[in-house]
Every structure is written in C-alpha cells, then in structure tokens.
Length: 251
Ligand SMILES: Nc1ncnc2c1ncn2[C@@H]1O[C@H](COP(=O)(O)OP(=O)(O)OP(=O)(O)O)[C@@H](O)[C@H]1O
Image 1 (cartoon, helix red, strand yellow):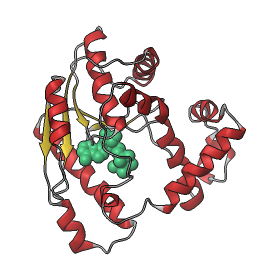
Image 2 (cartoon, protein in one colour):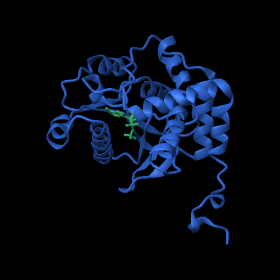
Image 3 (cartoon, helix red, strand yellow):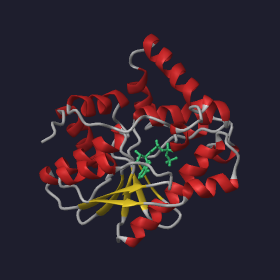
Image 4 (cartoon, helix red, strand yellow):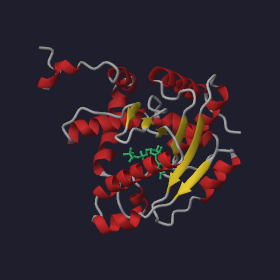
C-alpha cells in the first residue's frame, strides 16, 4: 500500500471541485510516462476513486516510442497495485529519425506524436477524458518560456477541449513538483528520470530554454518565497484588457 500525504489528496480534491475535472460516469485515460508526476497521479486517482462520492473509471496508458524502452518495472508496478494499464508501442522514434535532424525540435516532434497517439487510444477505449500529469512548476515554466521566447501570454489550462472533442484535464496542476517527488521517494517507487523528452535518454541535452527557465524560477523563489502561491492566484485573476491586445480593450 502506498501512502499519499493529506496535502496531495486535499489539493487533488480542491482542484477537482474548483475546475470540475472529474465527474460522475467519466472514463478517463491517464497518460503514464513512468515519471514521478504521472506515477503520483495514478495513485492519487486510485485513492480518490475510493473516497469520492461519485463513480468514475480510469485506465492508464504508456506510449512507447519504438526505442526498445524497458517498461517491465512500470508494468509490474501497475499490476502489483491493481491499476488497469496498457502499454501501447509506436514507431515514433523511426518516424522522427526520418523526418528531422537531432536538435530540440526532436522533443516537440515526440511530444506532438505522443499526444496524437494518446487521443487515438482514448477514442479506442471509449474514454471521454485524458488526464496529464503537469504540475504547477510546469505551468510556471511554460508561462515564462512562452513569455520570454515566444512573445505569448499563455500557460497550461487545468481543463480544455482538444480539437477532436476529447476533454484534457490536469489534476496535479496546482501541486508543486517537490510534493510529487516526495511522494515517490517516501514510497520507494522507482520513477523513470525527469528528461523533458525521451530523446534525452540518448544523446540530446535538456532543451536550453526549459533548463534556464527552471533555474530562473528557482532563483526568484529564493528571493520571493511566495512566488508560486502568488502565480497560482495571478493565473486566476487576469485583466485581459490591461495589455496591448486591441481585441481585448474595454472600449
Ligand atoms: N510515454 C508516455 N505515455 C503516456 N503518457 C505520457 C508519456 N509521456 C508523457 N505522458 C503524459 O504527459 C504528461 C506530460 O509529460 P511531459 O511533461 O514529459 O510532456 P510535455 O512534452 O511537457 O507535454 P505535452 O505532450 O503536453 O507537450 C505526463 O505527466 C503524462 O501524463
């Protein structure tokens, strides 16, 4: 039996109620990479399933990239904890080799292809929602990366509808990365490393933009300890008409 902290379960419950993520009768496909975030997610959802006054089902899926990755331990972990899990292998790696040279776009190619695969699997198994394990640190990094490198004000929504109609939810979005790390460590769960993309397991470095944004946020948090609490509040308190976007002006 794993032990989930009160904090994780109450954050999950509150986020769920606040954004109406999981509802009665949902069948949720849970993206399980085997990293600390998605591992925490499946255990927290299992516990929530036990506690919640409403019924929902979920099924975990791990998308393989056709790189002969070894998912034996992850498969065994799900079996041991009675979590319904499927391993869905693909040829994403071969396709990537054909399509692009080894640079950071390798990572976004993997990410796009994986997302498409997850949508397909959700449809195949009749799931109405897809849960991803992004957390508050991801949302903050994504916000600053878009801000600094893309000239865009955007982050990661707790819930949205994908183009094909599937509802994507992020139950961990208000949790800190360190809470998730603490969960796997205190339960001695072997998580697959924190690479930002699977290609990094081979010869590609962590994309520069993400690494330096992470570093910048860590420095800022040292100086302003309530940074993430404040960002979380700010993400819910947007004055869209106070920027330079003509379409959002109040006049
Ligand atoms: N191989 C995988 N199989 C299934 N789900 C996965 C896999 N890799 C990642 N995911 C899901 O996607 C979430 C985000 O993963 P990660 O941060 O690595 O991706 P990302 O590249 O930032 O995401 P995105 O695909 O949304 O751009 C994970 O928490 C997990 O739910």
